[in-house]
Length: 200
Length: 227
Length: 201
Image: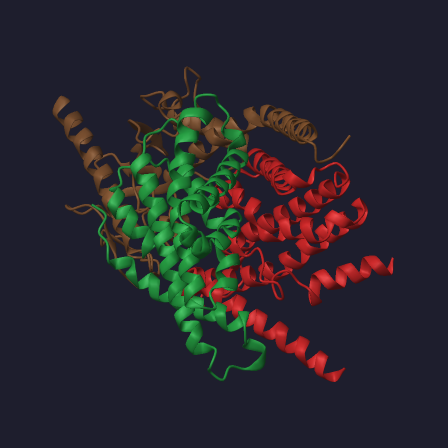
């Protein structure tokens, strides 16, 4: 736990987590809400925005909690509990704040917030940043990038689903089956981004 | 007592949390020693793998490791006697990079170095062993990495690591090619095949290995000048 | 007894958490490129589902409604940490290759789903059985995927070579997209069989 953060440019990390290492398409995180919500563009966009906001904020808070509380007090063995409690509390707070500040935004985001606590991508980012020893800026960029990548993936899938729903698909493949195969092709496409970046 | 009263909620949550935390700390304390030993073993086995020693189970491996790379005053078995540095202290933790260790494997002098370099997602650590004049790689093993499973994560698979075994080192070091992702069996071309769909991790591996080769060459040159 | 077998049949087939509910694939699909990792991972999920269901059922009269979700999460996180500690101490290789995915069992929707849908309102023994069978239903599907991926992608099973050395490995099977394709096809097959049975009735 004491070793130094890897020498990775935070902005490379941002782009890598949106495209080449999309958290949904290469790490399979955040699938549950993904499949059930990806049916129309509007709610997909709302959920994507909510995930991005929560991911960025919680990754920063979790980093600080880990760095200044868990590591000094040697409490790393409880990190799973602490991370999930931080995420749940942040989501609750956000819900309250948004409700007070902007009722319009609450109408758009509010219903998605509770779904997010159990979104594996959020806890996933916290665990990845811990295991990879990221520093603060790297963590925030990784959180933001993962959120944007998830958002991009769910919007793209919702758009494809719209066409697929009108296509003549074998009865047994309808619904989740064709959705998963569509995601597979998207994932294959995203692998192609792999040559886009250059780690310096 | 009313189950929804504030007091009950607080007491219940507190008690539940207390019990869980207590049991976890017991379990953690009971296994701490084993976990530390496992960590040592991982490093030891990576060293043995890199120099091409067979693994023979936990105890034998730890013993062989200290015999080969730093027997802290212990008399090593005859065939694997010579060593110059105590590796145990240098390689105790997951430190990013280590010193160069000399060891004698089957009568041949080899240079071994633990390395740490930057992959796509995080630090890749491992062990690289080369022959005394740094013209051939003896072997390479990965200790830890955080690359994507199924893509960059495949650097820890045997087919990838085994490509390095006995590979000739060219003037410019080793190149990791964008190939079909099959294992390159030619050990004279100073090149290994990269991983399909993970060109960034492959490029990172190339950089890490060449950096270590340069460090090892420097050491060889210094020693040559001293004699 | 008929109750128990009804639960078994429901969780393994007609209400299988993956085929029918598409739940909980997040954390495990990533490790299906090797069979041994998948076996340990799904065993861990089964263990956590069974025991957290039992615990929730045992405590159901005591848990205050207001903090129900958070207490359930605590219980799940507790068992996951125990699994993590045990893996780190006794199966270090597997623990290393699973990495952060063990911790992600906490957010596996199946576990919370079983606690909410079944354990809340049933006696402990039934909850244990329900959790266990749900976990096994989950395990079977993922083990099939892992077996296909490892066999075609690496030519081996559990790390032992099973295919002749002349076999050309399918690199795509090791890469993440194949998991989506295989799962999609499995669901297709399962749904087709279910629909045929339905039609016969």
